[in-house]
Amino acid sequence: MRINLILAFLLSMTATVVLGQEIKYTDLATAKKGEFTSYVGSDGAVYKVGDRIKIGVPSSNKTFAFITEGDGILLPITNLTAVASGTQTEIKRIYVVGNKRAGYSVVFRTKGITGLSNYSIQFENALSTGEVKGFGMTSDDALAELKKAKDKLDLGLITQEEYDKLKAELSKYIK
Image 1 (tube, rainbow, N blue to C red):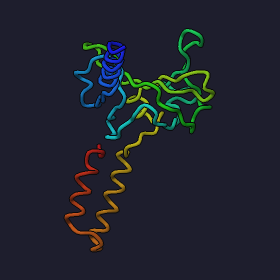
Image 2 (cartoon, rainbow, N blue to C red; image 1 turned 60 degrees about the vertical axis):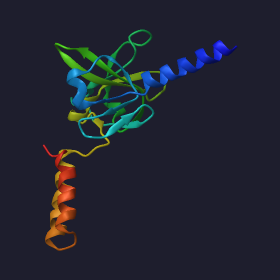
Image 3 (cartoon, rainbow, N blue to C red; image 1 turned 90 degrees about the vertical axis):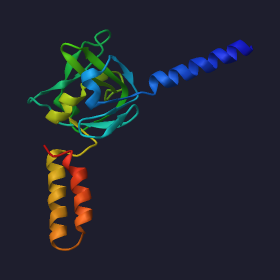
Image 4 (cartoon, rainbow, N blue to C red; image 1 turned 45 degrees about the horizontal axis):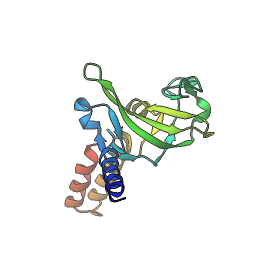
C-alpha cells in the first residue's frame, strides 16, 4: 500500500514536470520535438491548452493553407474550408514538430466545430496570414496605439515618461 502511494506520487510529479512546460517562439531554433502546455508566440501573447482562439479568413479564396481538419485515421486530412471563418476553437494540445535541418514549428491541435473532428493549426504561419486571430497586437494595432499616445503627449494629457514606457512596450510588435 505504501509503495503504491509513493509510486502514484512520483508518477503525478513526473506528469506535472513533463506537461508543465512552456515553449517560446524565440526558442524554436533550438527546440526539440515534444508536447507543451503553453506557447509564447511571435506576437508576445501566451497561448495555453484550454484557451479558445478565433479562426480568421482563409489565405486562399476557399480553403485555409495552414489549418487542416481530420486525423488521417477515421477522417481524411483536408484543408479547412471558409465555412469555419469567424468560429472559435479550443486548444487541446500544443506540440513542436520538425527537425534541426528543416527547422521546428509549433502546431496547435484544437477541437473542430462539431466536436467530431479536430483541427491542426501550423500556428505561426496561420497567425502571419490571418488564418487565426492572435491574442497579441498586430503591427498595425501597435502603431495606431502609439500614434494615439503621441497625440496625447502633444496635447499634454500624458507625460513623456508615460509615453516612453508605452513606446517601449509597443515597439516589440511594430515591424
